[in-house]
Image (cartoon, rainbow, N blue to C red):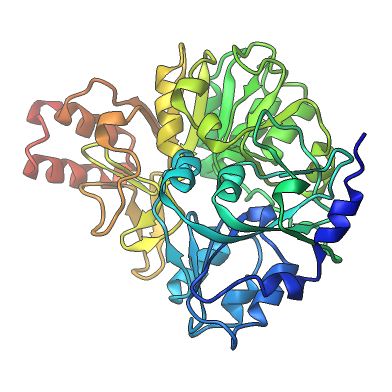
Length: 446
């Protein structure tokens, strides 16, 4: 067997040496979540006074980004994100992060066909004996990004686990320009938010709709966590996983014996995902776990792929829905909260799956701190600046704590009637009046 250690040593540099590969005007890629660099980020930030017009792209940052923190006036570095986590949301509100609209399932082709990349800085596990670096807990668009990179720099994070992949889950040392090493803090944990009492009510309704042998997708948030909790307590069995985010919720279901993946039509026996986040216990469990398969996001999020699994159940959150059935899942007016992600793809996949269902979930109300009052999430029209994540023509099942409705095949007044039926009772009369003004209400239905 070829020994790749010599080539590795030849390409080994300090973070400071690698950071000098960035030139004025460069696009620098930081990747997604746990693959975002630490040592390289700090080394690049230290060059703030030497460089100008450096644009950095990332996605779902889990910790502070040095190039942003070192340059609050954005004289040298401009950070851009495809999907906001809590940290990036705060940066955006301070004017320190630009948002890039993007359907996550498109991202590999966006890189291959439309973007230029000068330098990629990515964290990976140590090289294996065959000379490959695994992409660990983030497959996504990593290989496509690196294919378009003029310079590839890998930061070895000794804490990242190697995780099996379907394809495009690794890169060879011969394709890499340089490697950096150094000590890292333990991996950032992504703890699932504690579900509220209303989340639990909604989750119970969803679990009643799931059958044995179903394949499950769960989005981010307290509600998906509640669904996982109630599935674990149910009599359901032989469930499968085909999901964008693989999280602790699935880990707990696997430990409880609910997930076997034996009824899946594709990737039978395997939990399929494109990136994973959770606790350190979860990261350790995922290492070299042959029941897991990461795939690029254009495979995982492709409706025609996921729909091959019968009884596909997809579960995602939204911010609000208007009386026409348009769903906003990523902004509150002009305030960007997250991103498009893969919600529309999974909504579509659940629709085309035999026996499948796609649930868009929300609490019926929320408390507006600025106005100091409770508001309805079912609204006459989306807020000014609100983003349509799911167009009305592609809507399926919407759920609140007041019930589940299916909008497929309904005309505009039937949609209004159905949506008002799951709004909070305190807002229903007002919504009816709004529907009447918009001429989407039949008086006889009141």
